[in-house]
Length: 285
Length: 258
Image 1 (cartoon, each protein chain N blue to C red):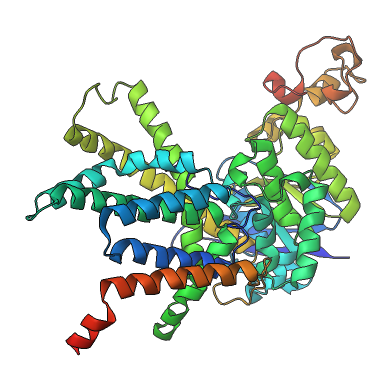
Image 2 (image 1 turned 180 degrees about the vertical axis):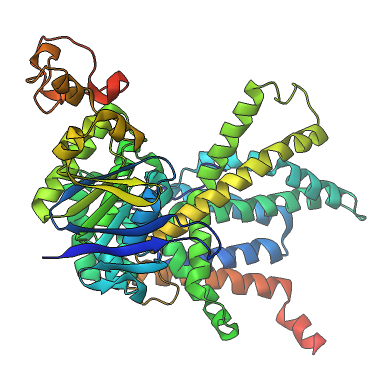
C-alpha cells in the first residue's frame, strides 16, 4: 500500500540551533484520516513541510510511496498536496482556471488532459461557473475550495491540511469538511489535519501528538481520549465537551443533547443545551 | 488603481492574440509619442481609442476615473510645457497632457483585456532576447504577473493599516497639504512592506508545494493562435505607424539629411 513514512526524522534550522523535531517515526497510509495535535512550537508545521518535501530532514528519512524526499523528485509534489492556513496566500492565478492549472503546468501535463482535469476539479468543487472569473471575486469559503482544488487537480495520494478551517465561518467550515470527506471517499486520500478543532475531531480515526519536537502519542483517537485529561491537556489538546460529558457519566450524551460521538450536529431537534463544540467557544451550524 | 485588473469578456478586443495586444499597445504608445500633428490629432487619437475600447466591451468610465491618480503628473507636464517659448504654448501644453492620458489609457486597456496567461505569454516573448544575457524570460514574466495579481491585495492591506492608524488618532487632518500627505504615507510603507515580504515568502512556499521549479519543463494551459482579427489589427497599426513616421520625417527631408 502507498504510504508516507517518517523514519527517525530530525530537523533543525542550523547545526547550532536546538532541534525542532527529533527522532519522529510514523507512517500514514492512503485512506487514513489522522489528526496532528500539539502546542504552538511543537513542530507541527515543520512536520508537514518535511512531509511535503519542502524541507529536508537533517537526520532520518521521509519517504513518499518509496521515494525519498531528499531526491527532490517532482513526483513527490504530485503525490503530496499541502493546504496552508490562509488560502489566499497560496493562490497564484488571477482567475480560477489559471490557478487550478498552475500545478499541472509545472508538472508538464499534456494540455488536453490538463484542461479536462481543471474542468472536472472545478465542477467537483462547485466552482464550474467561476472558471473564468477573477479570484478576487470569490468569498473566503470559495477561496479555500479553490486552494483545495489547486492541490486535488494534481491527483495526490496524500493531503496535508494546516489548520484548514481557521479562517472560515462555521457554515463554510462544515461545508469544507463535508466536501473533504467526500473527496477522501472517492479518491482514497490519506489526510493529515494539523490542529483540528475539537468539534472536528469526531471525524478522525487516529491521532498524533507532538510534544517538544517528539512524538508523544500515536494511536486511535479513542485511546487518546482514554488518557487522563491533565496529561492530554498538557500536550495542548483540547478534549471535546462531548467526551468530557461521557467521562462524567453522561454516557449516551443525551442529557446534554449529544450523540455518543459528542457531535452537537446530531443533537435531537428541540433539545437545548450548552454548546458542546470546542468547549462552548465555537458555534456549529 | 484598483479597477486596473483583468475583466473577462468575449469581444473582438479580448479575442486578439496576446502578441497583437502587446505589440499594438507598444505601437500605439509610439504613435502618441511621435505624431507631429498636434492637439487635434492627439484628441482624435484619444477619442478613437476610447471608442474602440467601448466597442470592445472595456469599462471605459472606470478606467477614466483612474486618471485622478495621475493629476499631479498631468499638472507637472502642463506646467513644463507652459514654460516654453513661441506661439501657441497653451495648445502645446494641452497636447502634451492629452498624449500622456492616451498612453496611460491604452496601457490600462491592455491590462483590462489581457488575462495573466496572455500577459505572461507576451512578456515571455518580449523578454526572450534577454536570455542571451542569462536572464530567465519565464521567471521575469511570472514576477510581473504575480505583481499584478497582488497589487490590489497590497493596496487593500495598506488601506486596512491606514484605517487602523486613523482609529488610534493618527489620521490625516482635513485640508492637509501635499507635503503632509506624503509625510503621512511613510508610516504606512514599513508595515505594508513587512506584510508583503511575509506574503511573498508564503507564496513561494505554496508555489514550490505545487511543483514549481525554476528549471522545470512546463506545459501551457492556454494555447494562443493568431486569427483573422489579428491580421486586420496588425495591418491597421502598421499603416498608422508608417503614416506617422512619414509625417514626422518625410522622405524628402530624409533624403536631404542623407
